[in-house]
Image (cartoon, rainbow, N blue to C red; front, side, top):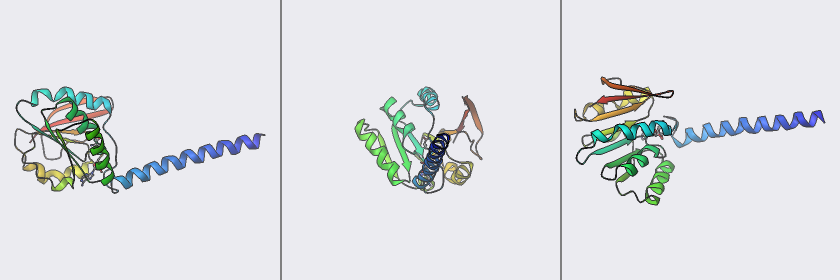
Length: 181
Ligand SMILES: C[S@@+](CC[C@H](N)C(=O)[O-])C[C@H]1O[C@@H](n2cnc3c(N)ncnc32)[C@H](O)[C@@H]1O
């Protein structure tokens, strides 16, 4: 009887380990083994939605570069219907998921682009949201140099290497860095 219990615990343990391993490999596959697919937590999205209003006078354009499944871009597009929102993502599957959510929610102000974020011209961007690794943020520096000075860049957990920090907000264990273009 004790042996059966032991086998049962072993099977559960192996199932859990295999489950976690498959999840990690699947996430890495979805993101082409570069920036891991980690979504912005809801508390950070709430904070972001609260920060944006003073920056939205006039017709503005918001970019999320490396948008994942689009949690941020969708929430921003829903909350601010007059704002043009552009979500850039390279994974075919994640782009498809975002397009599906956008059409289900009838969001006409959201454009989803399947593109390499490092090749996106950002001249028209007013606000940019980033949740990328420090390595990707460094690689993005040349594109960010071409931004308008008035542009606002929000980067989660890692500051931009070439820009001065305007504000730093703590949200639980996360930090949101605000920079100017
Ligand atoms: C840490 S996740 C952030 C997801 C989303 N921005 C969020 O905060 O919930 C980074 C995302 O960037 C995407 N990504 C990484 N490199 C990219 C590239 N060169 N072009 C477009 N997307 C890229 C990955 O596929 C992944 O979905």
